[in-house]
Length: 485
Image (cartoon, rainbow, N blue to C red; front, side, top):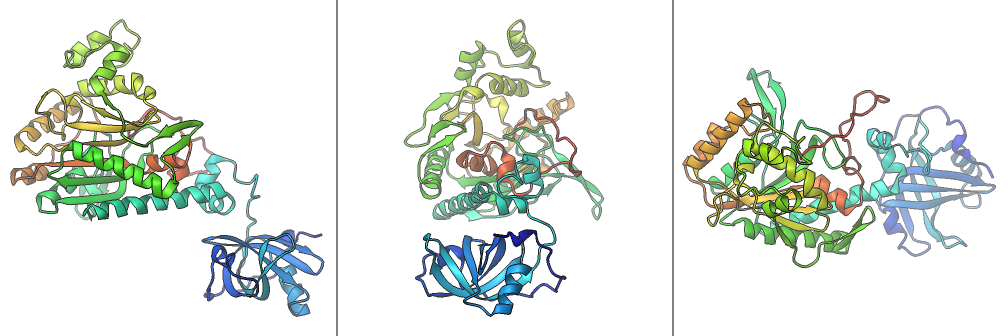
């Protein structure tokens, strides 16, 4: 037996311009013996055993064995094809389906065309792409040799496709909004800044499309959604990326309770149709998304974990005083909202493993959310948390321009005090609100995080084709830090 994948390839010839394909690998496996197929793909294995050579041809659907037999093809062609090919080459083949003695579905090749040759050797299937950074940096190789990675990305596509179908069925309209904006708004995050040469203005890469989507609702597009990239110039950890994909939707005349029902139904539809079960396993822990999900009150959970009652402790200095001398006195922030958020993330979030709705957030946390009529000190808002990951944030939207301006002006004061993750005031947005906005509720879902959870990926980098890495391979990546996406 000889493995001809190591043999020197012949002189380079011009790549083919194309090749007619009538069958994909996975479809060919279902055809009867003797059926003629014409296929194309990359050669992933190539071995010769005397008068027969076997290989694996990979196309977008999967892999199928091919065989070149001396008894079937002309003698000179047999020698040319079996000795001249190497793993990594692209080939087109025509032949008949055949089942080997071992039951392997195979194409018995009658004609073979080299479409393009590989100049570099592919990594070994089992050992060549074990380094996580190498897999992220050279995703094209990872997809070729790592079946788990390939399946994970195909699952991501199915997840997004099912989400779109769910929203289409709810009569939502998919839209696009700007990535470059004059203000960083829609979420509490540090933005990326760029310069627009033609306009000679500094702009921000959006941290959220929220204010633009609300303007569309004000324009009469009652239900809109966008799936697109957001950018937040923050720390790195396994559940946060600085460039990530978000789904945001807004529905006129819904409140946050309507959104709670919608998101649970959407999660369950995705799990039913893409995963096949509402119970999944992540890192050895079973997570059950079936049925109703429990509701937990944000302030009550913080009080249970820390003894601090956020219904009473309502300003920064009081909160600092409440933490002084305790086990969390090292926490600090230039704003009350920032310190409350730190306290929650440190003490409560790590304990929330099974899917739940977190409700009753303090009003200071989100300046774009509506106050509760029953208790103006809290928001009509919820988060979906599972595996201690915040998957969803949603609320009844603030549509009062006077209240909105006051809250955004408070955000500006906090920014002046040193909190660089506060939202900026957008006069165009306030003006749109002054022309009238219907009551509405909006929702944001991190697609990367949702996909990682459903595919048991240990880091978001494993579900993003090309995550940002240092430009020069070999340099250490930055240490993971806490962040919020």
